[in-house]
Length: 242
Image (cartoon, rainbow, N blue to C red):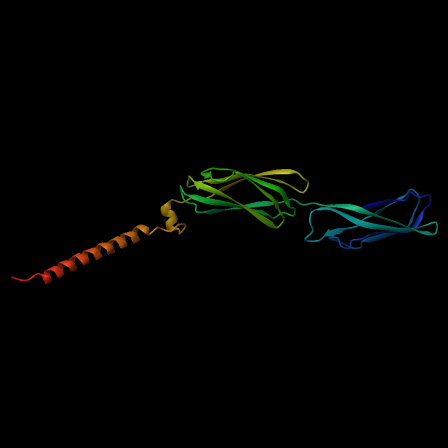
């Protein structure tokens, strides 16, 4: 809603107020222009427009150009300017945790995916991990940067798993569209397996080195025994009979 006041010394006629929405992510519901036949000196007139933002609009501040044309003392007049419009929106962060080699007393990796399903970007995102049930082998804090709307970023940590039921705890700090700092605490429990369970689930493969080594040693022993028996047969065959 825009209020136009006549601050000239006399009335104006045929006043037309129009918005220029070309190359802007807005469309007018109805008309983008309105008019009044006469506006007396020191009077004002309200013009109301309904604007619909485009589906892919970015939250932020927009300047919409306008033009006012009128007749003053039988001469044409014109004024131009811009109107500031604020489009709101907030980040909406969701978190997904994945584990690599979650085996008790073994080294593995935790990867956190930060998904922004909100309409605004989350800026200056940082992550602080508080270990519970695992030990960090890398830095506990990491800087991620911007997580754009309808996008995601990931961060990985090298860890050693100490318990079967650990929890990934972390604080995520970021700035929203209005430069307000927001801190979100996340807690995601996950499972860690014993070595035997991990082998059954196919997380790690059972080593057959001992079996293969035993087979090789057995073959060598059989070969040595075969050579020993063969040598004894040859010696017996070559010894004269009495």
